[in-house]
Amino acid sequence: MNYLQHRISSGIIAVVAAWVCWISFTQKPAEAFLFPRVIAAFFLVLAVWTFVKALMGKSRVGNGLSMQAAKNMAPGVAIAGIHIFWAAKTLGFYAATTIAFFLLLSTYDPAPNNEPKTWIKRGIITVCFIAIMYTLFALVLKVYTPRGMFI
Image 1: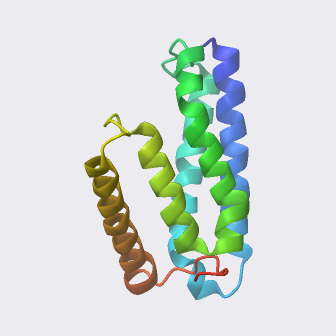
Image 2: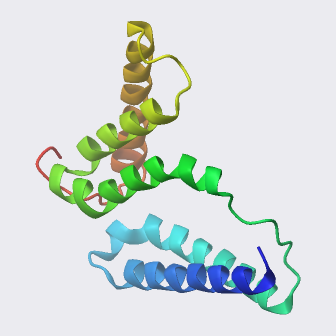
């Protein structure tokens, strides 16, 4: 990855961070967006910092993303995209997150798919993860999550 690629990519990320931050500060009710506002502001600070470092030429630039790494990431990006842009709003945040997490875990878990023990383990991990997510977001942080068919 050359310096121009790094400047462009970090600039795009900074613009996305600014957009996410703006959205989090303009949504109502304000108390439902307290936690997202903190995260979005932190994300924006880091993104702008990275962009400024890229413009000044002080960033460490690696070799970029190999084709094999992109192929390995593609299923996860597709699952995440469907979750973010469709499933969370249609099915509800927790139902969609359960499905997405299980699919991601099944896609990237190196355990053999032909053993029932593997699927039971994945199911238990998924249930535990969703229980923790629900406790954290709904009960502790009181964060608004997209509502849908199944909560």
